[in-house]
Length: 457
Image (cartoon, rainbow, N blue to C red):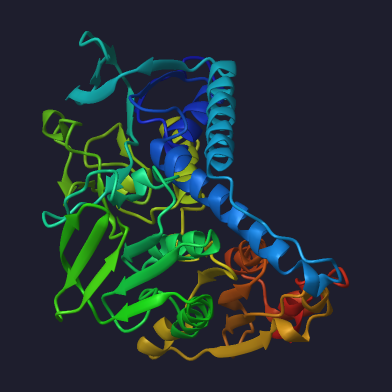
């Protein structure tokens, strides 16, 4: 860095966006203070995302063991050790938090435990757990406080029978019959997770199919998996009230239907953690609680940025981390010349059900809705030798391309390791590669990735 380029960063919120910004800014020569009130690494990341994937991995192992006879092995009975699972999740969380904290410390980042708020456009106050506070002057302020589960007035959340996602990683006890309200990404992951553990599961679907924002063909494939697992689907039913009577929980829907179980879990979205930031003290504009930012994640106030869920963009850890890095670079003057902005339309995402679901770029349904000409090719995993070796030929690869140039515009994958395989299509979409580039790539054989080449061909 050039002499005199050091700046004072104060970051409120230590999730993926805040920690990435902190480490990157420190490497670029900034003096960085990070204020976090819950857990370094982010509550939504370490207490929601990571535990859910750990639980799903355990459920997947149970499924594999139940199917061992199909792989030429003697039948194996797998039983869930719920207390051991809790210990495993706690261990993963602790190790990741220590890893993030160590990385921050190695870069000279000062970590302050407390709740941060704006005092002015260049000043931040951190209120500590004991009630005392400390104030910091800043050249750059980064707001990265994330979000929390949305709780409607009609939901009597108690953390025992009526749960939000924050109560369910893992829940106090394994539900005998779990009712999941919400059929988006989080909701379907819970359905998969607890049905794998042996719980009876009912999913309340407000529309006529799950995953309303995803490719209908992808949603249909997941629904069939749920039906095969014995999941009860209440389609076209919107939850209105929840009543609790001892160990019995009832979800009353707008069409008169009632779902009865032992526990209910709400997965109906989130709201931004902006209410304690005192945004008005610095004149920061927000809409529905989300800080309004430009393509550099800069708010209307010079020097104040926002990233992660608080920015109102895609609520993905990968997006938050990328935003954090871009903010550090922009604030430190590295974006004075031409550079690549974040293209949120090209972000890859995954749903960790069984089979996994992943997509990136332009969706087939969106292209048709826009009247855009595209070419769609689809190849099932059943043609893959590796899928047959794995005893899991479910799913398919779908690639969306420009019919004139062959440029890859998007794609969807349903199947084993979809979250890993989508990286190939994500690179193709971001780099503007063509189907010819994929076809002429020499993939490993046998490998599931070969299906990508076949779909491109």
